[in-house]
Length: 445
Ligand code: PFF
Image (cartoon, rainbow, N blue to C red):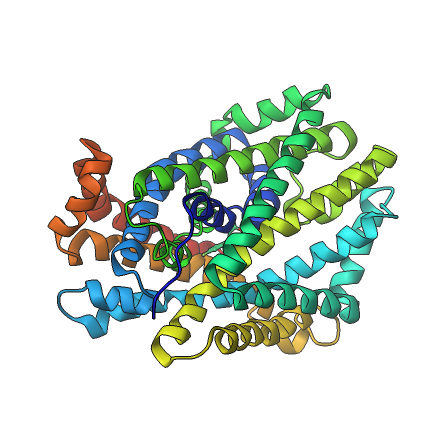
C-alpha cells in the first residue's frame, strides 16, 4: 500500500495536533496545581527536553525509515528476529485503548460547549453538583455526545491522511491557538496574572519527592504522544527529505508552549475569580465554569471558546490515537480505509460506552475492580504501563536493533555534534529512566 504524504506544514500541525490534547489543557494545569506548581513545571520541562525530545526523534525515525504501518515498519527495520520485533508496532493498540476514555471526555466537552452558551454555575458547589449529576446519573447526555465524538472522529479517519487528518488539523489547530492566545492576552491584563506566573515558575522545593518526578515523566510522555505509534505513524507520511530534528523541535515547542499558556491563563482566572489553583481533575469542568460565571456575559463567551478549544485539541489527538491501527488493517489485511476506520471506531465506541457506564450509579459496582472503575483502569493501564513500555521499546529498538550506520546516515547531518550525546542517551539513559518510571508509576497509582 502506498501511504499518502503530508505537506510540510501539514505534518507539523498534525503531529502538534496529536501532541496538543486534553493532556495540555485539562491535565497539565491540574497536575501542576496538585504537585505544587513551579518545581513540578521545572522537572517536567527538563524531562521534556532530555527524554521526550530524544524519544520523539527515535519514534519519528522508525516511521520515517519504515514508511509503513507500525507493525510492518518494526518488522522491516529489524535485521534479525523480525517476528519478535513486530510486536513493537502493536503499541498502536494503546491508542485504541486510550480512546475508550478519551472519547467519553470529548463527549463531556461537547456537552459543556452547548450548556455554557446559556448557563454557568454561580459557585463551585453548584458546578460540582452539575458535573457529578452528568457523570453519575445522566446516561443519555453522555451517550449522545459520546456518539457525536465517535461519528466525527471516524468520519475524519475515513477521509485519510490528506483529505481527513491534514485538512482537519490545518483548520482546527490555528483556530485553537488563536482562541488560546486571545484569552491569554486578556488574562495578562488582570492583576492576578503575576500570581499565576509565580505559581507556575517559582519552584518550591519542599514539595518535591520521587512521586513528583514520576508523574512529570509520565505526563511528558502522554502529552507528547510518545510510546504508542502516533508520531511514528504520522512520520511514515512525512516528506522524503524532511529534517526530523527540526520537526521534533516544533512539535515539542508547540506542545510545551500551549500547556504553559493554558496553565497561566487558567490559574489567572482561578486566582481572580475562583478558588485558586489546586483543584484536581475537576478543574476545567468544575472550578473554571464557576470562575467564568463571575466574569458576567464575557464569561459565557470565554467558556464557550475555551471548551471549543479544548474540544478541538481532543479531536486532533483522537484521530492520531486511532490512525495507527487503521493503517495496520489496511496494510496487512487489505481492508478498505472505510472498513478499517469504522471497525476501529466501533471498537473504541462500544468499550467507551462501558467506560461511561462505569461512572454511572447502578452500573458502577459491577464495573469496578480493586477500587478502580473500568474508566480509571483504562487510563491507568495505558498511561502508566503501555506508553512508558512503548517508549522503552522504541528507544531500545533505535539504540540497539536498527543498524547504527542507518540511524547515523540520517541523523548525524541533522543533529551535528549532538548526535553522539543523543545516541548515548537513547541507549543508556532513557531506557533506564523509563524502566524506573514504569515501575514506580505502577506502584503509585
Ligand atoms: N498527547 C495527547 C494529549 O496530551 O492529550 C494524548 C495522546 C495522543 C497520547 C496521542 C498518546 C498519543 F499517541
